Length: 195
Image (cartoon, rainbow, N blue to C red; front, side, top):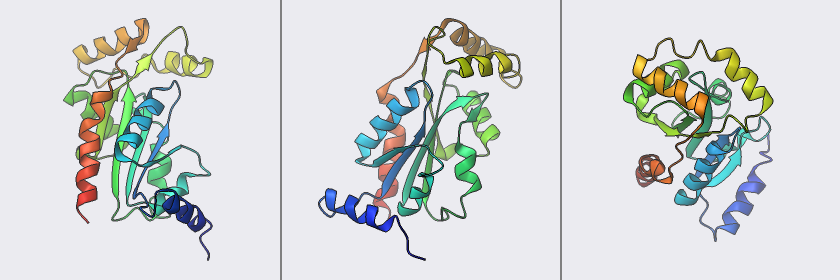
């Protein structure tokens, strides 16, 4: 079967002067923090970037390095399951997969381990980035989701981490820091060197 995406890959290669990128950043964003981080990561890596969509997720088959990011809701990285469920179809075996999650929880090892456990991912492929949240500008659907899960998200967390998260949800928070992408960018660059 002819791959309809091959022409897109050829056009992309020509646009880069024949140096086709081997890295794509796919992101799912609700309030803009995940998109902001994804854009910074793509720029630092000179990578292609697309917002998450069921229609375009298959583009990951064309790349060697895949950076996937989404916002964290109740310790779940949104839309990551779609990528994982289609790993075989997308030919992800042998590819380098890097995952970032953007959330309001504190940047502690304990919290990151909880996110990895909840999402079934290895700690060494996951990068946590603190996001932004303004309770006055939240979308209606997100507000309903947050209200429904408020009492359930703290269960496995330490009291200190749970208190930090509660305060950020109630008062708002802006933890977006462009420097936080450095470990992820360095990991992808290292993978690009190993061919």
